[in-house]
Length: 55
Image (cartoon, rainbow, N blue to C red; front, side, top):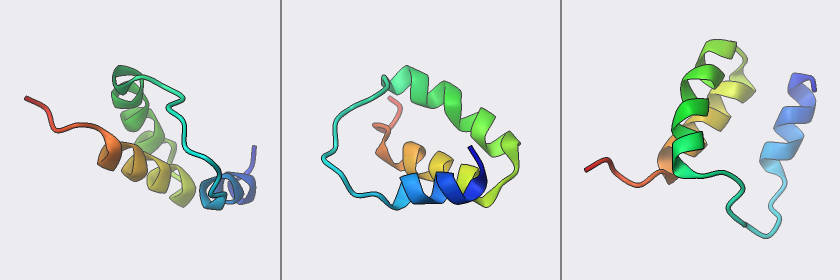
């Protein structure tokens, strides 16, 4: 999937359903940040904002 396709998916506003667990999201965030594209960084930021605050 190229960056344009990632942006298209990020901008799609469909019905929201949880797709991954909070633990999976926490694991994905550093991987996305390492990826280097703006779309991956935006996705990482969106995941991080949706995670509950750590206790």
